[in-house]
Length: 262
Image (tube, rainbow, N blue to C red; front, side, top):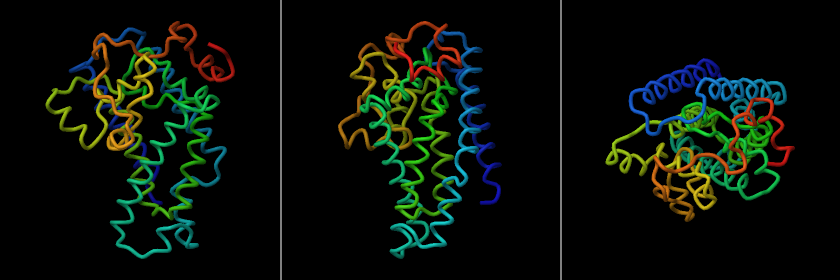
C-alpha cells in the first residue's frame, strides 16, 4: 500500500510528541525512575522490534491482506458486504483478538516470561506503550497474520487497525492527568490512561485486569474490568515486585530477561 511507511511514522511521531507534551503540562504521577534512561531503553526496543520484523517477515500484515483479497482467502472475501462494513467489522474483530492474545500472554507461563518485560517499567509514560520484547512481537505478528488470512481483512482495515493500536498504546500508557468527568466519558469508547494504569499495578489481581488497548468493551464483557486501583493512582506501585532494581532493567538485561529467573 502506497505511503504506508509515511503514515505509520507520521502518526507514531505525532502521537509521541503530543502525549509527551501533555505529560509535561499535566502529569498524573511523579516519575520515580530516570526518565532519560527509560526513554533510551524503550525507544531502542522500538528500533530493535521494527528491524526484527522487517528481517524475519518477508510479507507483513497489510501486504498479506492484499494477497488474501486477490486470491479470495478469508471470511470477508467469501461473503459480500459493503466495504465500510468490512473495515468496521475487521477492526472490531482484530481488536478482540488482540485482547485475547493479551490474556494468553498473561496466563501462559512461557509467554508471560516474554510479556513481563513490558510490566517491569517502574514508571509509565508514552514510551512504555512500545516496551515489548522482540520475541513477543514475533508471536503477535504470527497471530495477527493468521487472523488476517482467516478473516480476509481488507488491507486498509489492517493499516488503520495497526496505526490506531500503536497510537492508543502510547496514549493509554501516557502519564497524563485527564479531568475525572472526561475520563469517565472517554473510557466508554476507548481505553484511557487511568484505566490502563491499573493493569500495571504490582498487585496481581490488578495486573490481571484491564487487558484492552483500543476498545474498552472486552474487559467489561469478559469480566476483567477494574475501574480504579485499590490504593489510588498516586499511591499505587507500578511494575513487578520481582524487578525493582533499575540496574537490572537495562536494555541488554531486558532482552535476556525471559531466559533468566527473577
